[in-house]
Length: 213
Ligand code: VGL
Ligand code: ZN
Image 1 (tube, rainbow, N blue to C red):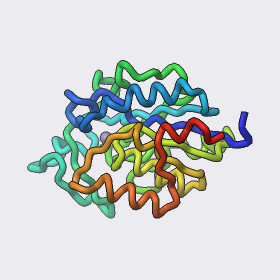
Image 2: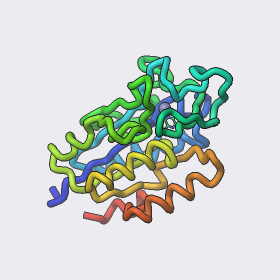
Image 3: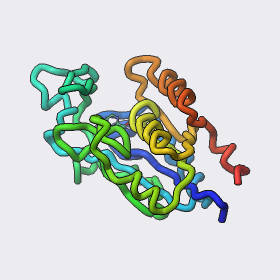
């Protein structure tokens, strides 16, 4: 056991974000074997899985906004919100984890985006940057120092979760070969990677995980 408490966060590896789903991330399913391999390395003190878990009337669904289409933006109060195809509706098949993802080692599963009027990309804070999911409290209570993120999507839920993890004071790493992104608007993945680096988040690969302890 290391002096550090290391937590892996497996972000939104759900059917609806994989090929064939309504909000398919290009090659989204390719993260599954990579994450399974990471889990097998048993290098983490805790593993958290997240699920995007929306009510049908979630404001970020284009279908809930008259004459609006997926990938357009709307302004709700002070929040600029991108609109999406309906996805990850709570309790539906598409909201399930990818069937090949090994979830046996998940200590905690956190569901987010459950508030109809505010979306949540981050596993820590809803898009209003105020309402908490409770994940920061969990990480503090298990004594986490370092947070490692992987999953979907690089430029949305992984990005927002990583920025908040760093904001809450955790040393934060993104395992980039275990992530895939949406890249809307075009260039968004590269922009997010640059922003994360600017915040002190380390972008690493699975290969680099092996000998870090
Ligand atoms: C996500 C868009 C909408 C994600 C979730 O998991 O990255 N992206 N909802
Ligand atoms: Zn969502």
